[in-house]
Image (cartoon, rainbow over all chains, first blue to last red; front, side):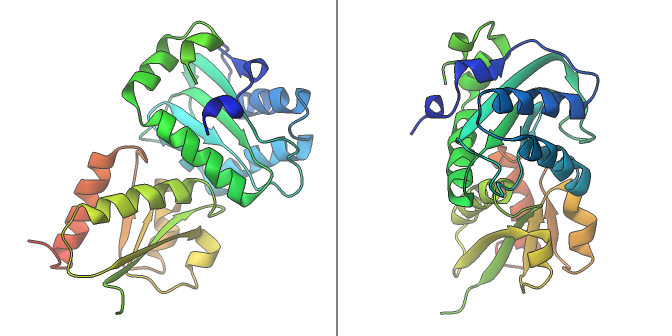
Length: 143
Length: 100
């Protein structure tokens, strides 16, 4: 199982800045809506999760994993990625600003965990983080 | 044999982030030579309130709520930083006199 199975090129947008974290999540969510992976409710739920539980989704410096409970609003397991050179603050005192926002959609809790683990092992490799930071196109990242 | 420690990793929904934290926390506990079994479970904040445990490991967003019902709370900033986990869990184990 590799990330390639869940990250389509059309759902990765590099070098796009936003004024606030809500707009960033909305943009990533819209990528997933456009590719018929989620509906609008899931996109709204990802924003609500941060409003309700706080910015813990910024799991490490510069990287946020937006997600919500599926509740029947996810049709295809998929991850969208947006990179933001200027960075966006989520209100996480330790790990702001966020430069890479992953929006994660999974149909079930079990698949959610599996995708999270696959993404986490990618993010635990220093070379992968470097590739993310220097990528100018999807192919550079090497998912 | 009863568990030496019962540990909860906690996030909002109890599914994604707390699972990742559980995996890294389990690995960290294994790196200490402890005289018994450590049981680690991931859960949501609402379910954590009704669950008996020795320590909660969570993120800043949930720290004050966790402290309101659990005396031992470890706050993790970088989920992927195994060094941070090792240092913070090590401090907890020393306080419990489980390691030197």
